Length: 169
Image (cartoon, rainbow, N blue to C red; front, top):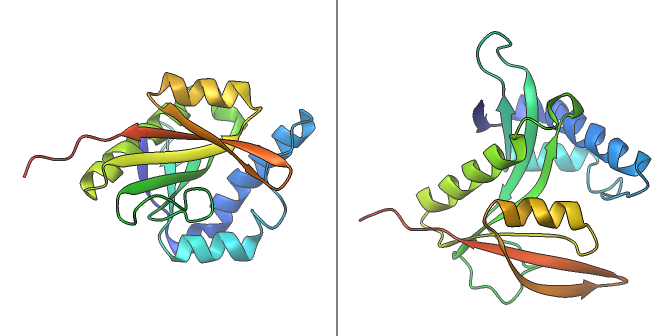
């Protein structure tokens, strides 16, 4: 699997993966992202900013997109108390259904960990709706520890963090 920063011209590809995941989750009776969260103009803006990364299969099926993730340098909405420059934040991790069960989330999270390390950020942080037990278990299997649960409006969100060893100077 190869993971690279999405090019601005790949915003539609990113949006397609996010929409596929959103539709699957909604069909399961667990809607997650709002239409505004994955609106084409928002995806384009974030892709233009270099925030999205695409996981692609290498080898016989070169270039097939398996998943995407957005990595942000700041997250004042869910982590307002965290000092600027100390963390990398994982958002919008999504896997195409055809790649479910192939370890793509773990690969994307490993990539995010290495990216945080290379940026000199000592923590990788993320959040999810607090009642998503399978998602929380996925994060815990990948080394994340529950930091806290916060409330935003009517919903509770679990905040997870992972200490990232810094590169040797």
